[in-house]
Image 1 (cartoon, helix red, strand yellow):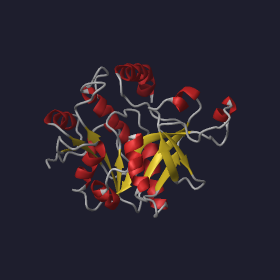
Image 2 (cartoon, one colour):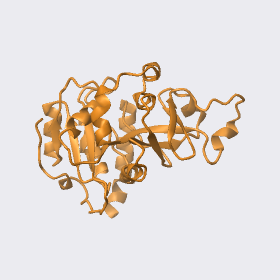
Image 3 (cartoon, helix red, strand yellow):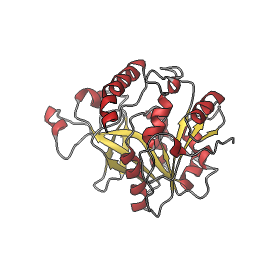
Image 4 (cartoon, helix red, strand yellow):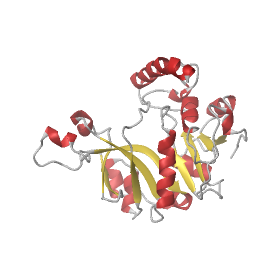
Amino acid sequence: MQANQSSPQSAGAPRRSVQFSCTSQIIIPARLRSTRLPQKLLLRETGKSLLQHTYESALRARLPQGITVAVDCQELYDEVTAFGGTAVMTDADLPSGTDRVAAAAAEMPDVDVIVNVQGDEPEIDGEAIDQLVCLLAARPAASVATLAAPIRSADRLENPACVKLVMDQGGKALYFSRSPIPHARSWDPALLRQNPPLFWQHIGIYAYRREFLMQLGALPVSPLEETEKLEQLRFLQAGCEIVVGQVEAAPKGIDTSDDYRAFVRRYIRDLPRARVA
């Protein structure tokens, strides 16, 4: 596995040191091929690649000791090193981003918690990353932590691309689905306005205990995973405890050209404010 050892602090704002008993590392899996938006991680209408935006947003987290980008090709490796990030080369044939994260984490035996941040999340919140690390530190029985945001729109609730989840009173995930869950036997729009919220959108960012991540490759695809096409159901069906943190809104990931154009507009709109700050 090839690695660039330049410091992640060289891109974006300086990182602040935080004393914390749980060692953690952010790993960003980066794959060049994309079905809906080819080579999206290298799009740079803002003057920076989409991957660099994600990297610099992840730098705002205070608890992880560093960030590594697990890439699948030389072009992405060169991009990361060009903006001063740390990159490792992983097998281009790995089937998923989780496998790519696990391959990079295998070279980090001293790290307790691995945070998987997708490369197409340029607006990921650093505080949300810290929240995941804290969740695993506080819940020793949990092997995985993830996030959820309230669903207040019927369109989003019905959209199979929006993954829903239900959890118990302690924040442990009970199930994930592409269908609306819980299913209202008698529908009333007021259900979307309930507080605490009744419907939750799963946000696809995970923190793993390293030992669990190293065992994932041995877990067979489960019937629930195969049915819903949701990898996290493999974890649940294997008996893994997933703890869920709650945030106000889901970050806007980039899946389509429309998503990217909207991100560029938001970035340009916010530039004057960032310069003043």
